[in-house]
Length: 159
Image (tube, rainbow, N blue to C red; front, top):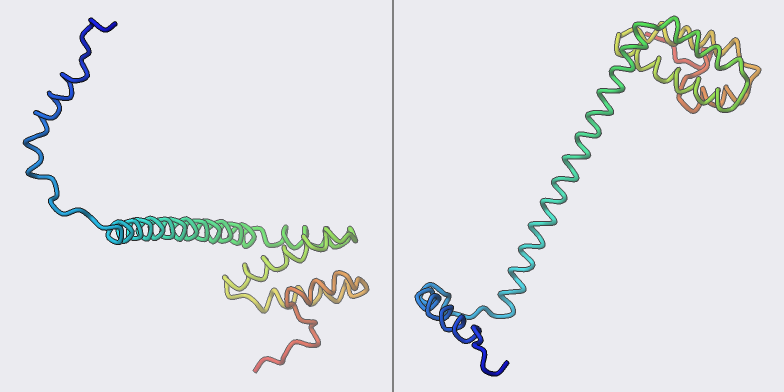
């Protein structure tokens, strides 16, 4: 092994010769630790800002998608209002907590659908009749209160 040529020294000499011309473009001033720390801070701050902007954009897209889905659902409810009212009443008659929750969510959506069409009075009248018909179900009445559907007698007089 001692008599074999080792290319390491020869390669190193070629490398030094090839890079000797590049030494003129190399920075003459060494960077300090403070400069390196400032550069690292700037890189980190930039990365965090890009990540924050990406999160905000994702959140904006998620909110817009949810709003579009809700608008589609409300449009569907508006087109099928009678069926939706019937489905709500069928849920109420099951006398279960989970179906009361679904019925109150459906009524809340119906209120929003009526509000979009400018016919909130029709909703209030129908919800009042529904509330009156099921006034013996306190668990359901609590859900009416939670979503803010007033009792017909508690509704302020219109001027």
